[in-house]
Image (cartoon, rainbow over all chains, first blue to last red; front, side, top):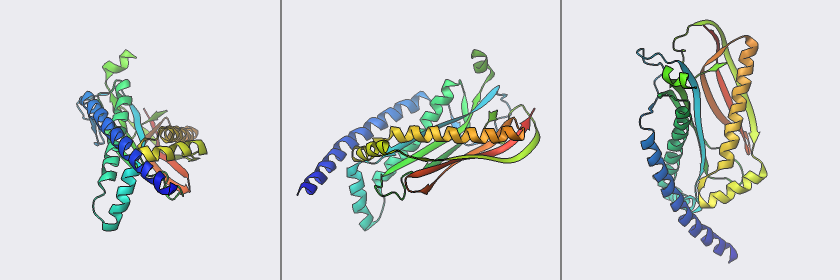
Length: 154
Length: 104
């Protein structure tokens, strides 16, 4: 009986807080994406010949995001019938966008004008462990191209 | 030490090549962080403890890679890649590798 009560309690808490956290996170992501719209992060490997960057730097951003109890429960139900796991889709989407934004923030602090050769890596750090924390880690990294004008500033 | 994940260094030429250098570290999460993480697992949201842990470990891996390149006499590491794998329960291996070169 107590188990059932705790379960329902977690479910409600997960639904409430998880939903709030996700909507707040999306709001902040969209806001910051607009802020960094002039700092492109692209996966090409060589800088444009027209540009002679004064300096380059390896920049990276990582984030670990966990799923909430309610979504975990829903996805458990979904596993029976198969199909799209929407709750996990939004989780990895948020994590990737957040990681790219953190990388861009670091690049921006260095005065970069773009980030080249962007690579994204996704892993689950608690895979195989007993407690099974449903979380995803995303690392974004690339090379920040810093123009001469920004270098002289430092 | 110059570290980049591009294959060339803009405005510089590669004069010597030493092959692959690598650095890795295996880290376990500590219990306190694990408890916090399982709490967060109910509410959802970012696991800041893990984020920091992985960031630190990655820096460590990069430093080890740099040290290896230094020993060889290189002054730059190009085409750096990161990789993560779980070797055992509750521990993650963070691995960085690249090409050690001398640039001028």
